[in-house]
Length: 229
Ligand code: 13P
Image (cartoon, rainbow, N blue to C red):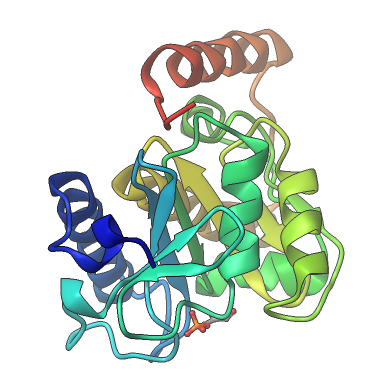
C-alpha cells in the first residue's frame, strides 16, 4: 500500500464508493438477489476499482466496508475481503475500457433462462436500446474462478448483459447505476418472454428496427460511457 492509499480516500474514491453502495443496496431492495448474494463494482478512474465486500448484508453495508483493488486484484484500500467474484468484475473492466460499472446478480426469471441454458431474445425494443441485442449465455465455470471471469468477458462481447450458465447474470454500464438498470431491463424481459411463451409463440421485433436500435446502443456507449481509458 503506498502513501496515497493509506491516506484519507480521495474524492474520486469517495464518489465511487457512494455509487457502488447505492447500486448494491438498490439491487437488494429490488429483489435481484437474496441475502448476501451478488456483487457490484465501479471503476474509480485512478487505476483502482471499488468492490462490494464478500458475504456482507446489503442493508448494514457502509461505504467503509467497500474494498479498492488494482487491475490485478491486489487490495489497495479497505479492511474487508473483496467479493469472491473479483476476477469476473476485473475481466470486464480489462476487456472494455469504457465500462464504468459491473453488477452480478441472481434474478429469478433471468436465472431460469441461465439454468435452461437459453439466451434471452431481444423481444422488446428496450432490450436492444439498453443491452445491444439478445442476452447470450456463457459456459458454466466454478463461481469465483478466473475461468468464469474470462468466459463472462468473452461472451459479453459489445453488449451490456450476459447470462452465466446455472448461476445468474452479469451486466455492465457507464457506472454502477447504469449496470443496475441493465440488470432490471434484462430481468423484466426474461419475465415477459417467459410469460409470452406460455401464452403462445412470441413474435419478433422487425430486423430493421433491431439493427437501428443496436446502432443507437453503440452510439450511446461510444459517446457517453467514459471509464478511464
Ligand atoms: P460475494 O459475497 O463473495 O460477492 O459472492 C456472492 C455471489 O453471488 C457469488 O457469485
